[in-house]
Length: 351
Ligand SMILES: *Cc1c(COP(=O)(O)O)cnc(C)c1O
Picture 1 (cartoon, rainbow, N blue to C red):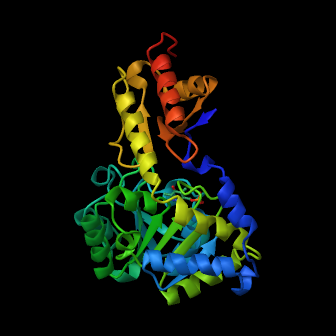
Picture 2 (picture 1 turned 90 degrees about the horizontal axis):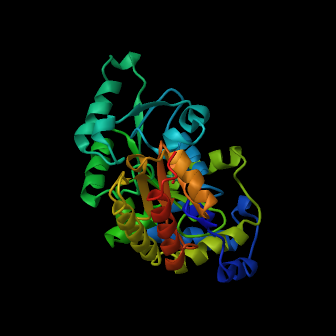
Picture 3 (picture 1 turned 60 degrees about the vertical axis):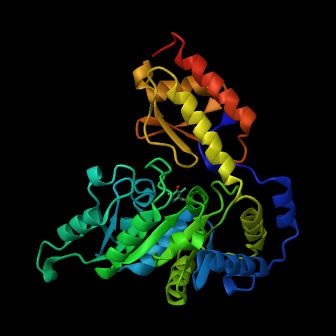
């Protein structure tokens, strides 16, 4: 099976497993795991932040960050397709008691928007006199934007939106599940992409290919508050250095190679565009390829099923298909996937 359903399906490579096997470990909950501490120091440096926290998943980074920035009854702003809003089990409401005000859908077609759209959404939260309102205290942004098509925030635009939010008294949180993809696509240091965010996290289990782990970073004061929620949620660990060593190895060996994933996504998207009736849903900027086969007479679900029978797995997201390039899908696998897609889409087996 050529699995293009997500970049989370990657398996740790032998050298990463070896680094994990050799890791020095201690009690992470007490701050005594040397491998975790080494990873956190490297992440502070890379992300340009004062302090950092090791967490089991990116979702838990969003959970503790939202909780640390807000109080129950506050309003959080985000775009309408944000991961934190759509696929985290109601995280803002469930874990932090938040209301969510979304940016206008038309103003954020790829998850990226302008200052005007932010101010319009903020204005809606402030329509009533102060005593009647839920105070807007947090803006959550995503780079790259997943359901927006792996879209990269242009740096100036990101900074302008962040600064406008800060000027209005909001904290800015950056969901950086694929921040390294954005940095590689822009050819800029990752710290520059996070400089105007108050908190940021990166995932090691997407394109970087580690088995688990994410790091949340920000000011020392923010991380101290976040640590309490991590602990209360059961996210404090023991000999977590085994995992942190895999993440650290990924930082040293799997960042620059994201360029290969991006090049393969380009190749895949060009091949798809050349097939009659197939529409690219978003321009491809990184490693996510969203496409709509309905013009070729296939529903997304039926094509996903037929592709799977032919040995190529993609996922169905919001009624279209998503193919993701990653570490475990090389040129040969992408060529084969293109061949299978061409064959099926030009066949008469339409449903
Ligand atoms: C995958 C993802 C998450 C969640 O990360 P996990 O490590 O899978 O919990 C959050 N936000 C975005 C944009 C993602 O793509």
